[in-house]
Image (cartoon, rainbow, N blue to C red; front, side, top):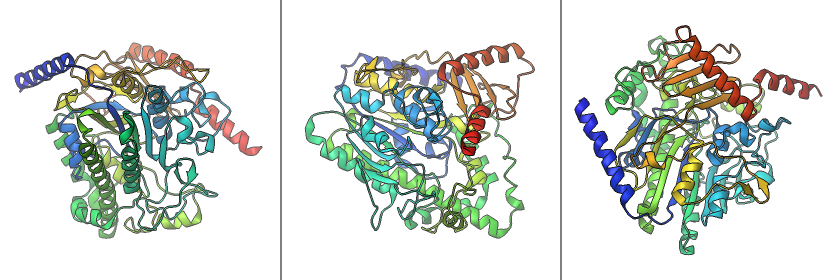
Length: 537
């Protein structure tokens, strides 16, 4: 087995060397596809029972990265992905809540440049379809940040059928370019995003310029809305229950080489009861939720298939790189509390298959989606920050790669600019731009050696982490106690080694403190106090 693995790695390295010696292609089309709230194991090629043949084909014909990281929540990830900076440096250290503190302004600041802006300067036509969620002020819509065309949802979540807002006083959700858009009959968000993405590509076909497409699906973020024909495929799938399904996913992931043989499946989350303790009615409710959730992922994959077919029809499939990832781990969130209208709270009690519902799959679904990890969206444990990452570029990325090096969304800007032959700017439109934090992954994509990062850092709502080599230091707010894990043997973070290696904890804590000061990170308790004081005023 070891000799076979060494041989496979040698063949990949040789293929990468041969590809690097071939003549350079012209500027490639670049497509970044972002899923929303999709867990680590929700693709077939990462162990799921959900049908994702188009994404699986991209993985089989290219690269899977098993230790690629996001920023654990939607807004920070989107800011970091588009700018190549840590989210705090880009002004979105939390969400789109607008604050006076520079790292928490809730919008992209004047000291960053987006991928669209940089690529546009380098001769690209730039398109976006899908979820923006980087402030809904008109002056911060996508066309103000370098995109030539845009269609999608400006805020965080809404009905996939376009028939209701989800927060009080919400008057605008969907937009086309710089104008409000009202969905019509037969609207389904996942299909509509793809429709406009294909339309934009078609319109730019005769311009003789490469294109950049940022396709940010809302699927499978709540509310759980799917089309009947997709739900029908999964009617019986989830009768086994979450305990059996987690075990099955875990074994498939090990067999695929996503996880090492030493990896242990994390225990069922403490918020999730044993499957056999549920009543028959409770089981049916969850089975329905998961059938709808799976259908949402399935429909997203179908639309990615439509996109790939369009590229093939245009003769652009061989000169297009496609990268796919998720913005955070599966979401434990329940739809309740003062942030929602009474109508939405009532709709959250309806069945997931009801088009007027507003339900979520909560801890039970997220614990399955994040197999084999602990925690969820918002936390800095592996269940919050790990994403399945796929990259496919025919003739450049050798087929069948599985890479276990840690990388981060900050690397996507550097990678795309490297592929496009475009320089990251020191200034943009007369203003200074912060230096790029990410590292180009082009050598890695080609199957060559890649130095990676000395360390990668995380912070969201007081939850903190540092990844340095095989070591990971992580804490949960408000406890703030550091735990230390050896990711090479304990990817699921079950064995805290902090008491055995106090000097390592101290060194990594100092690294985190230096990064936090440089990035403008503030203690979350300080932000909470600021928010309370502002409310009193």
